[in-house]
Structure formats: C-alpha cells, structure tokens
Image (cartoon, rainbow over all chains, first blue to last red; front, top):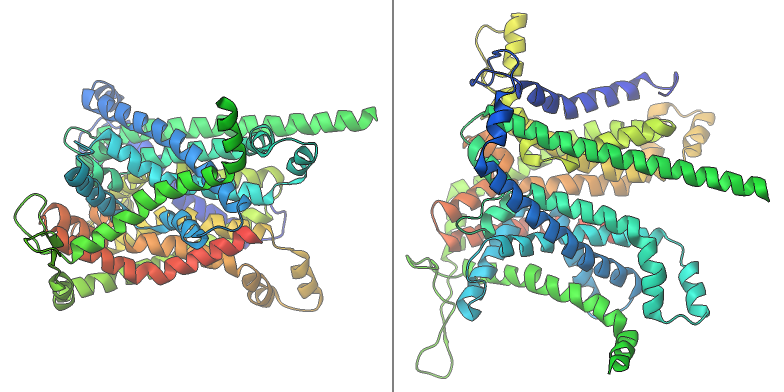
Amino acid sequence: MYGKRSKFLTTCLLLGFTFLYLPIILMAIYSFNYSRLLPVWGGWSTRWYKELFNSPEVWQATLLSLKIACLTATIAMILGTMAGIAIVRVRKFRGRTLFTGMISAPLVMPEVITGLSLLLLFITLQQTIGWPQRRGMTTITIAHITFAMAFVAIIIQSRLTSSDRSLEEAASDLGAKPFRVLFDITLPMLAPGMIAGWLLAFTLSLDDLIIASFVTGPGSTTLPMLIYSRIRLGLKPDINALATVMIGVVAIVVLIAGLLMYLQARRSRAAAKAEAMDS
Amino acid sequence: MSHRISDWLQSHWKEILLWVPFAWLLFFFLTPFFIVIKISIAEPLIASPPFSALLEWGDGLLPGVSATIDNYAYLWEDPLYVKTYFNSLQIASVCTVFCLLIGYPMAYGIVRANGNWKLILLLLVMLPFWSSFLLRVYAWMGILADQGTINDVLLWLGLIDKPVRLLYTEFAVYVGIVYTYLPFMILPLYANLEKLDFSLNDAAADLGARPTTTFFTVTVPLTWPGIVAGCLLVFIPATGEFVIPDLLGGGNVLMIGRVLSSEFNANRDWPVASAVAVVLLIVLVVPMMLYHRVQAHESNS
C-alpha cells in the first residue's frame, strides 16, 4: 500500500480494522450455528433465519422503525438544509450564537438527557394543551427530527462553505430573483449533500434506542427497543441472524452507492478528457 | 393575490429559511431543558405526573412558588452519586486516550495511502456508522462471555484452565466504548490530516529532524483542531453513555447515564432524575462549548 514507506502504519491499520470488524464477522458466523446455546457450536444451520422471518413481532417493529426513519429523514433533510443555508448565508441576525449552538449541541449531547427532556416536554404539553394525547410514533418522530436535523445542517454548512459562489452571483447579476437563485442554483448544487443528509438522518433514526425508549408510549416498539429487550438477558441466536441481515443490507447499499459514485467520477473524468481532445 | 404571496416570499425568504428551523429547535431542543430544570426543583409526589407544581395558584393574585433544592442536596450527600459522576468521567477520559492512540495512526495511515486504497479504507471506517450500534455492542457480548470467543481461544491454547470473567466487568465497558467511538475519533482526525501539507515533513527531514521529532513538533501541532474535535466527540457522549455500561457492565459498573435511566424508569423519581441530568449537563457544559468553538472555527476557515 505504501511501498516500503512504513510497516508501522500498515500494522496499525491492519490491527485497527481487525478490531473494528472481527466482532461483526464472528457474530455473523455464529448466526449460522444450530445450537441454541450460542457459544457452543452445533453445526451449520439456517434455523435462526427461519425463526426470525416467521416472527410477527420482528416484522411489526421493523415496519414501525422504517416508517419513523423515512419521515424523520425527509423532514430533517428539509429543516436541516434550511438551517445550514441560513447559517452560511444570513451572516448577521439576533441569536446567531444560540442558533449555531443548538445546531452543534445535539452532535455530542448524551442521549439520556435529550430523551428525558423531550419526554418531560411532551408530558407538560399534554397537561396544558392536551396534545399529544398518546405517545408513540409521532413523539418518536419529532424527537428524531430534532437531533437528526443538526447532523444534516452540519453537512449542508460544510458543503456550502467549500462551494463556489460565482454561479449564484452570476445568476443574480443576470437578474434572477433570490428565490429563483435558491431553487435553480443553490439547491441543485447542494443535492448530493442533501441526499447524504437524508441517509444519515435515516440511519440515525433507525439506530436510536435511548431517545425512542424515553418518548414512546405503550404499544409502540421500535426495532432497537425489541432487540434491546431481548439481549438484556443474554445472547440470542436469532438476534445474531437479525444483525447479520441488517449489516448485510447496509454493506450492500453502501457498496452500490460507492460503486455508483466511482463510476460517475470516472464518467465525468472521461467526458472532461473528450472535451479537452475536441478543442 | 398569488403575486403578493410570491412578492412576500421574495423579500422575506431569508427570514423563512432561518426562522422555521430556529423555531423548531427553540421549541423542541431548548424549552425541554427549562422543563428539566423546573422539575429538578420540584418535590416528588406519588401522583401522575410524580412531581409537585412550581407555581400554586391560590386565592391571591400572585401564585405561590414552591421550589426545593432537596434533590440536589440528595445528590451531593449520597456518596454513590458523587462516585458515579467521577467514575463516568474517568471511564470516558481513559477511553478517549485509547481512541486517540489507536485512531491517530489509523487516520494517518489512511491519509498516506494511495488512490483507491484511501477511498476503500475511509469507507471501511464509515461503514460501522451505518450499521446498528446496539448490535455492535451485542457482538462484544459474544466475544467476552464466559463461553465466548476470547475464553475459548485461551482455553484451547492452554493459557488458562477455567474461563476468566470478562463480560460484566469494567474492562468490558472500556472495550465497548473504545470500539464504538473509534470512528468518531478517526473521521475528524482524517479531515484535518488530509489538509496537512506533507512537504513540511520533508522539509523538516531535510533539515535533519528525526521522524519522531517531526511528528511531535510539526504534525501534531498542525492537526490540533482535529485532535480536540475527535477527543470531545468521544469524551462528551461517552460520559453519559447508557447502553454500553448496561449491556457489557451489567450493573457492576457505575455510570451516570445508567443511574439516570433507572432513577427515572425503575424508581419513578422524576425530580431526582432531572437533577441528575442538570448536574451532568453542568459537568459537560465546558467541553460542549469548547466543541462548539472548534466546530465554528473549522466551518469558518
């Protein structure tokens, strides 16, 4: 990888990635274990996968988690993009420090605090204005939007600061109104960032256990909540199967996305080359 | 009519862009903290909700205020809470140091890798981000269990003759936190190292500096913002961590996130849980502000 430059760096990377990936690989191997006692090897089998796919509980929780994640990602993308543009393009306004603080705080805020405070807000609201009548999908989605939009805003903000303003300036100089500039130039330019933000918000929502456990109500069990309640008591082979499926899906999606990006980069490089040869 | 709306939009688009997300955050992010503070000075009641009201509207014109600092006094007087806060901070700091020691060479190695390798390695660091955190912690339960992988290997090698207790110990919590938060350390370090001009290293080498000297006098100072950002991204959330001490520590490891959660769910003592949260926030406010400054500085430059 480095030629002869550094054995030290290669060793570090090798050890580091082994540390990151070995647990996942072992977990996947054990999902094919026939034995109910997880650590004891009882031969290869797919029985836990069958058990997993036949469990209505798992399907229900997955569906709820996916619904919440889609809603969260879409709304967080819109609000986060607005916030990101506002931070970069509206340089001076009252409460700027507070606003940027509220954008960066959710990135590091311990989830127990966010969860507790949002639950107490929902309870106070229920007592004073009667909404939300019951906690569940709506309250979880609101909670997820609140922390996910901060991540989207950070992505948009960094894209916008590193981007070239000349196109927008040219459009304004040619008489395009600010709104038109925003929709015809700025947003298309930000599209890759918005997609990345949507995906990040989606996975953050899908992955969240603590905040959802605080703000949920009876009957609304998301997938992480179901997994957590099962593994609290020890190792469960069907959870290994579930983990393998989930990580497999993610790996495939990321691989496809990576491949598409690579092909696109190659195509645009080829196009640039062709253009250069033409002229 | 529609003209008027579009005119209004044209002249006020900046305000709309700003105020919609701002209002959302004010309402759903800031207001809840004030409610937590309010409840932390209420008295616990056996009722629903289980705390007393701050303002009692009696016969008079002004409401009577009932507030108490009992909940904070309780935290202060019970040595368990004080110990738990210190324990959380200690675990988070040690884990941060380990993340830095493992993460820095990895980030450096990724930056120095060539072409396609760089992309692949970066993708491999980010991949765990996209997969379930809970399941990655669960994977460690399988490795650290009494009949888990590590004990199996050690028994097979004949180094031990009965399983060593690894799961449900403080050691397991350390491993879990370092494992989970490592990518949060590597990515900001990578972003910073990527911008580094490596010709400076060559210059230092040409002038006779040894590689280690160059590293500590040139590379480290230049990547300081990345180091600070990475450390805070690990340290702050790790201090309030709940899932890892719960699943890998199993009640034997005291961490404040877990205490908060059990105070709230098991004991139903909301005022004390709120006081625990407020104190945790006060403990973390300095590192959080530091993080905000690094973040703001990075996005401006």
